[in-house]
Length: 143
Image (cartoon, rainbow, N blue to C red; front, side, top):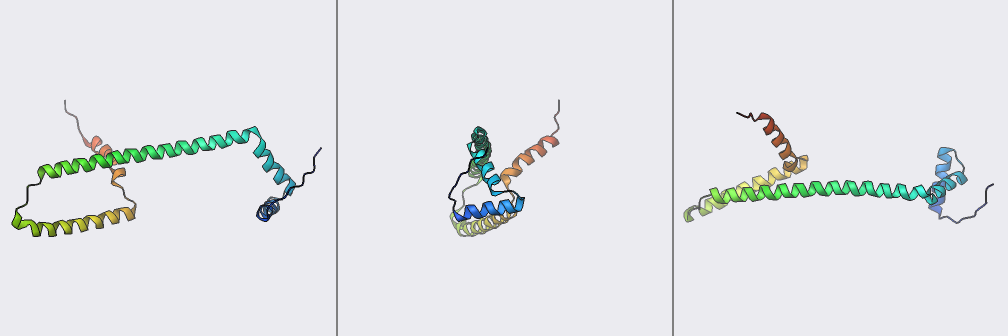
């Protein structure tokens, strides 16, 4: 036995039900009954919780990758600065203007290369593990 229920819907929802009913050759009552049943069933909450858990797990993995990439970037930058400061001799005062010009030129080239890599979707952070794996395969161990 079915119970008659009268409800008020906004026009957009009513149009969506009409479209779905026509497309799937179902009655509007069947569509509304299915929607309400899925909403009030105890499984609905479990499904919603499972969906949230999957999303949280996916976000956690992304955050872990971001954290790893940040650590790699910071360590690479720190090593570069350390080596650069250790290996670069002081510049004589009379050579400063040409050194500054060369520095500006190198910086412009750096920005150009960075822009090209980003536009091409290249990432040094993603390439580093590949380089490490390739290097490890080419290393021969001597006993």
